[in-house]
Length: 372
Image (cartoon, rainbow, N blue to C red; front, side, top):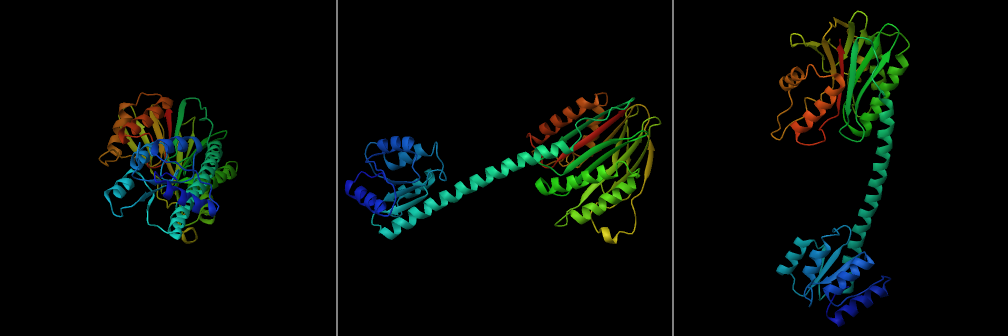
C-alpha cells in the first residue's frame, strides 16, 4: 500500500490485514520502489499524488521490469475521470479506486486483480507443460524420420525437413530392398500434434508394407484405409510413392493428390512433371470406386528428381507474393550443379531470405535424387 496520507494508508492496511491479507506499506514512491524490488509483492495499491516520486512515475518504473500480469497495480485517486487516471492506464495500471471507496469495493477490486494474476500464473504453468510435451513429441517425430539417406551406387540423395511448429504434418521415408528403393512423401492436412499423429500412422503403414512386396498403388491403398479409419475432423493427407530400380534408372510411381514429382533434365534444363490421377488419402475411402494408378519413367544419367511438399510454393514475401513455380524452377536451374546435400541448405536459406523470416507458414519437406 503506497500512500503519503498516513490516515488513509493505515485505514486500508488495517482493513486488508483484518481480512487475512499480508500487507506492507510505504509513504512515498522511492521507498515503495525499493520494497517492490526487494519483497516481490503480488499486488500494489498506489496513490497518484505523492512527494519524492509520484505514483505515475513509480508505475512507469515498475512497468519497465514487470508486466500487468506479473504485478497488478491499482491506482488510488481523489479525482474520478481525471487525466491522471487515463495516463495511469496508458502506463500500465490494471484498475483504479476512488478515495471515497467502501470496503466492499476495495475487496472486489483487490480480489479481481489477484484472481486474474492467479489465472495467468496457472495458464503459464500449463503452457510450460505443453511446451515440454511438444519438445518430447518433436524428439519422437524426429526419430520417425530417416536418420540418413540411402547409399545407392550411381546416385546422390539428400533430404530437407523443416516443421512450421515444433511438430509437423509432413513425412518422408526410404525403404531399400534388393532390387529397388522406395521413396515416400506425404503432407497431412493441418499442423502441430494432429498432423504429426496422422503422419505417424502413415509411417506405420510404410513399415508394415515394406516387406510385403506391394507395388506403390497397393501401398497407397493401405495408407488410404489407415488414414480414413484413424483420422479425425475430416483430416486427410496427400502422398506420393516412387520406386527406383537403380541399375536401369527405371521408376514406377503412384500419387494420392500430391504435388507431381519433378524431374529436372539438367543437360537441357527441361522439366518433366510425373503424376497420375489419385484422390488424397482418407477422403471418401468407403465410396472410392477407382484404385490408384501406376506410372512409369526412366531416369537418365544427369537427371535430378525431386519429391517435395507445398511448403515451398506457399512461402510468401513481404508483398504476399508466393515463391511460385517460375521462381522454383529458376532456383533449380541456377543451382543445377550444386551437390544434393548443399542444395537443401541453399534452398532453406533462399526461402528464409525470400520470406523475410526464419520460420515458415507451412511444413517444408524435400527429397532430391541425382543420377550420376
